[in-house]
Amino acid sequence: MTPDHLARLTKLRQHLHSFPEVSGFEKKTSHYVTDYLSKYHPDKLITQLGGHGVTAVFEGKAQGPTVLFRAELDGLPIPEQSDKPYRSQHDGCGHLCGHDGHMTMVLALAEELAENRPESGRVVLLFQPAEETGQGAAAVVADPRFHEIAPDYAFSLHNVPGLASGKTALSVGPANCASRGVKITLNGRTSHAAAPQDGLSPARAISQLMSELVALGNESAPLNEDYALVTLTHVQLGEPTFGVAPGVGTLWVTLRTVSDARMARLVSNVEQRVTEVAQAEELTVTLNFDDIFAACDNNIDASDILKRAAFTVGYDMDLWDAPQRWSEDFGVFGQGAKSAMFWLGSGETQPQLHNPDYDFPDEILPVGITIFRQIIQDLLNPGEDGTHLP
Image 1 (spheres, one colour):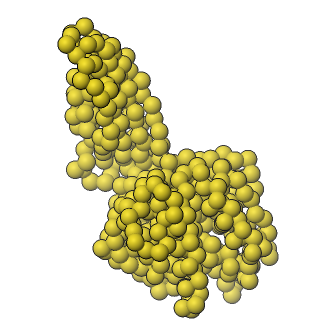
Image 2 (cartoon, rainbow, N blue to C red; image 1 turned 180 degrees about the horizontal axis):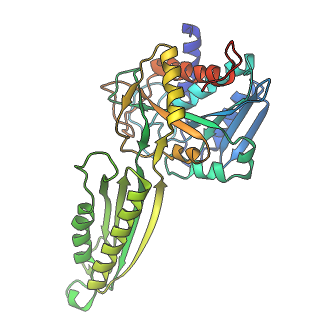
């Protein structure tokens, strides 16, 4: 990649960084991506896929597999803390997970595919909405138009702070934990603060559940099939007043496991314990689940393709024996395709993802682009003997 090309992609990434939109509201980002892709004349351009999703399809000259590359459109509802000239122009929202960089790398593929269609098969460039809430991938797959572009292979990446800049890594098998949020609402009866005995307060139940639900996890266990983590994220009891003994309490927790099967058991344990505590305190209770992410597993064949492509272009991809604790809805595409996601180091001293001062490092853009480009070469451009990989 020439310095001029990298400078142009850096300008693109920084523009995307300046105008983030939260999950489900990526309308302007979607329009910008659509306009950008249109310049490179894809054979098919699908918009409003699963919400604000955009897909560009580049057809090969002969029959072959469909290979999808996924990037995410959404930012986060977190105010950015930065003095950079391209900092977020949208108050309360920032590209603090690196999705601006992911989009730039996949957009860069469109430019190359416009000049060099694959010899066979087709390439699908997908810009997915609502990854941060776990709703986007499922909505894309549920869209009736998705069957037109259903892939045989699906690939993506995520930048990882703490990993050396430009270093690549891969977890074969479990790649990201399953997670879900649980909102527990306990209902009793208010009373005057001078006569709490005449009401029915959820205070004791809330206090009990705060410790007992966390204890259902075993966060010190290795990241294997037995791993479970319960994180207390929000508590509210009654109203901010001195004159009323509370009648309603809410407790929010996040559940996290390596596998979907372990998640099912953890959910059952949480439901059972919440019900028992509520009944003992004569409270009614409701449980609502949100931000549901299935476990994300890397297919062995797709992982081999990633490793081979990285090695071919000069990157020695580390193999990790444990998944990331954070969740990803990319695993949804693995239910119908051979899929894999790799990790791209954004720097050992880089702020953590979702920090208000996080910023995707532009110097690692060529790494993702080069590896994705090599995957296209390996899968869709036959070798001298006319065969494809794998």
